[in-house]
Image (cartoon, rainbow over all chains, first blue to last red):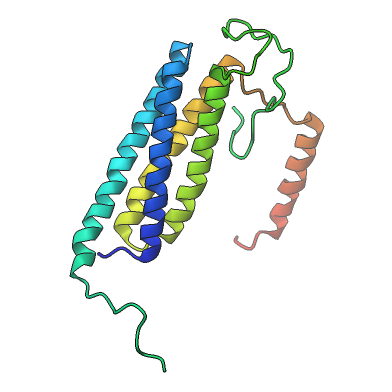
Amino acid sequence: MPLSSKDLHYLKDELSWELLAMKKCHHYAQESQDPQVRQLIDRVGRIHQQHYETLLSQLQSGVQTTGIQPQPPAGGTMTQ
Amino acid sequence: MQPPYGQQPSTWGAQQNQPQQSTGLPKVKGPEMNDRDRLNDILSTEKYLTTAYNIAVNEASTQQLYQVQMQMLTELHHCQRDLFNLMSQKGWYKTDPAPAQQVTQAAQQFANYRTQFPYA
């Protein structure tokens, strides 16, 4: 199934958020003093990285399917 | 315990002179971030993400995207809950109990509204 442009917008946003979140978790986990805090933040960060991979594969599977779709000419000549 | 959703820690922005027994946090806090700040920031991030994913799930055009994003939304909710639980355990996320009389009154009031139920 091809992605809708809305899907694409959401996927791009989500990928950016997940990337930021995993970086932040990685950074904070290193700085944390308490082992429990460090462990939890590290685990959350890894989940964000998994999510990134999941989202990316959704995007990549959209590449194949949408590639087959004929693209309508940009601008269009239907009016006037 | 109480649901954390839509709430910030009750001591948000005012980490005043509460005794922080065995938390390892300094009594007098400086400008540098501590463990509590870090947990708080990650919790905020998770809350933001769940809100965002919720909208994406509502808008997903295919069943596949709906399911994938729904799954991630659930996992983020679990992360959020784990963060809340740890903060609560450390005494960094205090919730104040509702006045007992107000709870009783509300329970009574909404129990009475059952007369308005349309289904037998």
